[in-house]
Length: 284
Image 1 (spheres, rainbow, N blue to C red):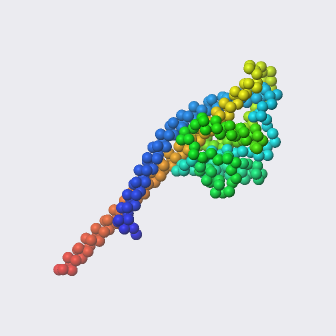
Image 2 (spheres, rainbow, N blue to C red):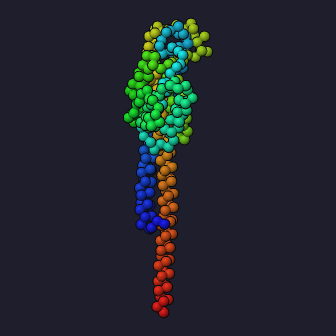
Image 3 (cartoon, one colour):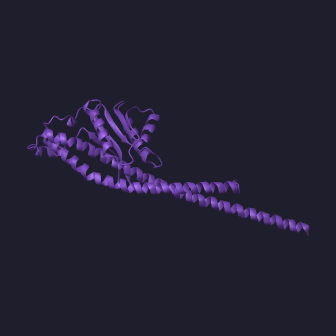
C-alpha cells in the first residue's frame, strides 16, 4: 500500500495535471468559437459556387476544359486532412481508420494518399503507406493562402494525368458534440445531368472559356477552404471535449486519493492511540 508521503505526492501531481487540462479546455473552447464562425461562414459561398459551376458545366457540355474531363479512373489521389497535434480524443483516429479502409477496399496502388497534418503523416508512415505528398506545420487557423497552394498542387496532379480523380476526406463539423467523416470528389468537376438538358441553350457573356477560367480557381479554393475550416472546427471541438473529460477524471482521481489518504491518516491515528492506551495499561 502507498505511504502517506506517496499519496500526497500523487495528489499534488494530479491537481497540477487537472489545472493543465482545464487551461487546454478553455483554450480549445476559445479557438472553437472562432473556427466555428469561419466554418459556418465558408459553407454558403462554397455550396453556391459549386452548384452554379455544376449547372454551367452541364450547359457548356461542349467545352473541353481539363478540370471537367472525366476519364477512366485508374489512380485516385485521396487528400486526408488531419491535425498537427494530438490531445483531441478520437479526432485523428476516426479519419485515419476510414482512410485505411478506403485504401484496402480499392485495388492495390489505385489510391495514392496526400496527407495534411503531422498526425496523419506519422501514422501512415509508421504503417508503410506510400504518400504522394505531405503538408505539415499547418496554419493555426483556416488559411486562404494555404488553401490556394494546396488547390494549385492538386489541380496540377489531375491535369498532368498523374491521377485520374481527386477526393478529399475530412471531418465535417456539425456541432461541438457531433462530427462526421466525409469524402467528397474534388476533381474532376461534376456537372448536374438533370440541369444540363434544360441549360443547353445558355448564352454565356463573356464567352464560356473566360467565365470558367475565372470561376474554376474560385470554386476549387472555396471548396478546399471550407473542408479545412470544417476540419479545424472539428479538431478544436474534439480537443475541448477530450480535455474536459480528462479534467473531470483528474478531479475524480484527486477525490479518490484524498479519501484513501484520510483513511490511512485515521488508521495511523487510531493505531497510535491504541499503542498509547496499551502502554498506559502496561504501566499500571
